[in-house]
Image 1 (cartoon, rainbow, N blue to C red):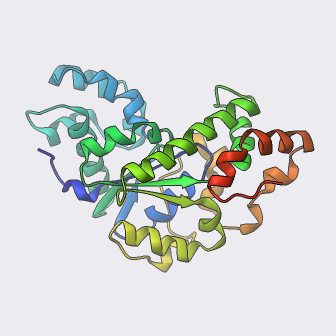
Image 2: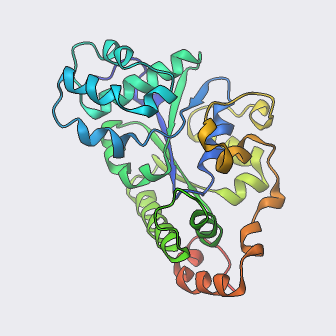
Amino acid sequence: MFTGMNPPDYFFIVGCPRSGTTLLSVLLDRNSRLCVTPETSFFDEIAPQLSKPQEGLLLKVLSRWRRLGELKLEPAAVLARLGHGPYMPGQVLAAILDLYAEARGKARCGEKTPQHLFHVPTILRFFPQAKVVCLMRDGRETALSLSAMPWFSGRTLEAAAVYWKNSARLADQFSHQFPGRFQIQRYEDLVAQPEEALTSITAYLGETFEPRQLGTDIPSEVVLARSMRWKGQALQAIDPEHLFKRSRAASAAEVAFLNQFLRDELRHFAYGVA
C-alpha cells in the first residue's frame, strides 16, 4: 500500500533535457497547493539499487544519495514514513514526495526529472493514477542548447539531436499508449501564452490556475544553487523574446544539419522546416 497521499495526487514532469521542464516546474511550484521537487533522477540512481526490499540496504542507499539532502530530507525520516515496509521503489518515492510536500505545507507533490521520460511505463505502473506532463520544444533549439551544456556527455550537436529525436518519438508513443495520463505541452505555447497554457495544465492535474504562478516574488526551490547557471532563467519573468534565440545565433551549417536530420519529427510536431 502507498503511504501518505493517495496515488492520484502525484504528477511527473518529463521531457528531453533543455525542453523547458524547469520552467514548468517553477510555475507549478508557485501554486498554493502544489510543490515540485528539484531533479531526483530516482529511477536511474535509486530504483535499480532496490531490488531487495531490506531496511538496512535502503538506509545505506539513501544515506549516500546526495539528492535526498538537496530535498532537505533525512534517510531516517523516509524509513519512518515507510514503517516496516515494503521497500519497493514506488513506495520509497511516494514516501519521499509525501515528506517533501508536508515540509512545504503543500497538498500535492510533483517530481521533475527530464530523463524520466524513458521510465514512463514504470512510473505509471508504480503510480496507477498519476499523470505525466511532457515538455516538447523545437528540436533545433533543444539540440543547440543541450550540446552547449557542460554536463551533457555527448557534447556534440549530432548527439544532442539524436537525444531529442529519440525523446520525441517516445513522447508520441506514450501519448497514444497512455491517453489521459500522458500529456504533451509545447514549450513555445507555455512561453508565448503562459496563462492559457498553465490553465490547461492545472486543469489536467485537477487543479486551478492562480495568477501568482506567473509572478516572480514567490520563491521556488526547484532550481538548486549548483544548477543556477543553466536553470536560473526559469526563476525570472517569462520573456517570449527568448524563443528561438539559439537558432538565430547558430551557423547556417548547424541549422541546415538540424533541419535535415530532424525533419520528420519536426513536421510531426508542427514545427516549420525551411
